[in-house]
Length: 473
Image 1 (cartoon, rainbow, N blue to C red):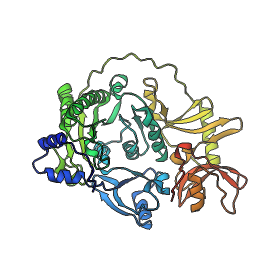
Image 2 (cartoon, helix red, strand yellow; image 1 turned 135 degrees about the horizontal axis):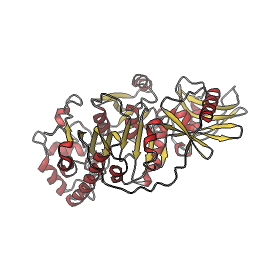
Image 3 (cartoon, rainbow, N blue to C red; image 1 turned 180 degrees about the horizontal axis):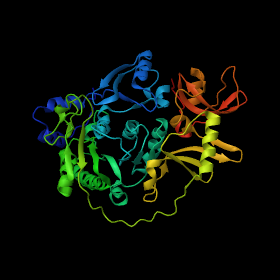
């Protein structure tokens, strides 16, 4: 029990005023005081759900399916010696430790999606759980713009994107209110998981409500209304928008959804989520939104609303000053040279629907679907860096291993001791073998990085942000 969970009297009175008739305050308080069940999402960019289940069984992890996410599971694992986050499977990107309720917004965004989305926007992306979930649902195709306003959170967002093998992301670092004016009607689908009061997170953070007040909730709601207007302007006609929060108060949830309808009228269509998963009706509001309380599914509290845009909107007028774009596309000859060398040295073929760009001596792979936005918006990072060019050829980069290689590539297989050394950023000396040039390294059949032979030693190429230093598997 989290008996020290802080629930202000004013907050409890407020909850009582909007709690559905079929729920009661005693169960609400009791649920808030129970620790959260740990949950994970299998990253299907790296492994199939079936293969992961087999690996989990070998490790004696007990998995219970999460009904609203085919890749999601509640997990019961012995973490007394090694936390889940320090397992080789996690560090290699095979799964993401993600709260069950937070899997709902991407599931809602892709529900009843008849065609694949070409361009998707995640307006408040860090730390990356929903971004990587969306990328997996897109199959790494199209382009996913991942925006994060807080500069301090961009680093962890990028690290998670890199760890999970995502290659179709373009990152930005703006107040998301800019999108409606800068990229009007550009996206097929948008997720606005809005900054909020965090009222639904007390089971994870006992102090989440320490500074709660109704007036601060109302202030946050004004920002949320600005953001959802921006999202709607950035959405194509016929596109889908999901608005979500980990708050419980109607001020941050239903009221914001209704504000969108009041602002844009018949251009907004509410989409019912009552059939999103079995028993979704337990959380469905009269409008078709999902209002999840902690006791509803024994999870965090969450709110999810989905909309279709059925008519165009007039975006705000902005003046753009982008400066010179620092990348240039590779010529056909240069492109062919990169493709040939990559095939010869690592047996990797570039994916379809991508283009190669150069900045100084760095070679980058961009998703083709990003190109219409390149002259309209400044991104902080686009696609993946695959090589550094030098006089004798190319120095391949770590993201070739994470985002382009699969389990079928030729790799040096490491034992457990060497794999630990690798994840701690150290060179390894596989027993009885040597080679030359760059080489993939693997552990238990999955690729964990890219190194370079130096005699009988493989020089470690793991980026600093992915290096771990203790308590490994």
